[in-house]
Image 1 (tube, rainbow, N blue to C red):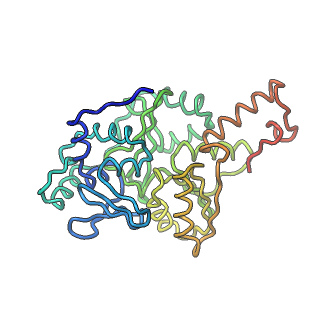
Image 2 (cartoon, rainbow, N blue to C red):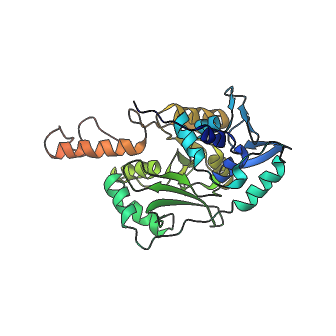
Image 3 (cartoon, rainbow, N blue to C red):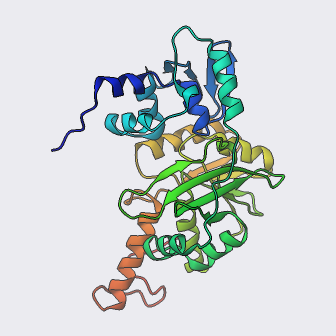
Length: 326
């Protein structure tokens, strides 16, 4: 096995990232709790300072590296590499400096801007439709609605809007199949993550846009109308859900479609604990697969096998026997 080696200077750099400034640049809804202390909306008792953090409910804490590991579900090596990419001077923590002033400077500099658009969209169409097997009509509609476009780096950009129609969030996903880029535009507000507004009292909740569109693609293939609300959390924070329920108070049913892993199950538990008394909360897991895009891709592959006569096909649905989607 090949091990990643970091120099002492690299580790010192990673360990001196200002956690408060970093969290804001990543788009987390940071709010001041007490002079010198901050909280992130949607994460309960998570308390952060410029150089350390502690989460009472999870009995976890640490420095910048552990913070990135926890928030982004990364390994130690991946977290260090993530922090080494941070070049903003305001994200460097200097012991003895005024954390309040550093936080204010970062807030002023982290103005949200949508990434520059590419002149062509062929890369995102090929990636999303051919590689990810998403419904072509849904992708075209998202582009028409200005919720999806290709940036100059050939990334998919999924845009989130506030109720007034102002863009407030952008999630980028690389189109290269080998280790694609993932990230949010600087200054993104996770409370307004990518979503598709509906007209019913039900909202389906996902971690990321591709999972959401995968689910919609399967519904469309099954002849179902897409009248419900669909939102993403931009991870597992429930800040986007909290905001959405304020904007759409008639919603009474929450269907949690987060990933089939530890983080996804934790998101479900947090949502259930928070809203069980006021809403009907149920789990729609993609198991046995990790997420709904993997579910969709496997489903399409099995249908291909059935069409080739390599697997029995259900006469009514056209899909392999035993494979269904409700």
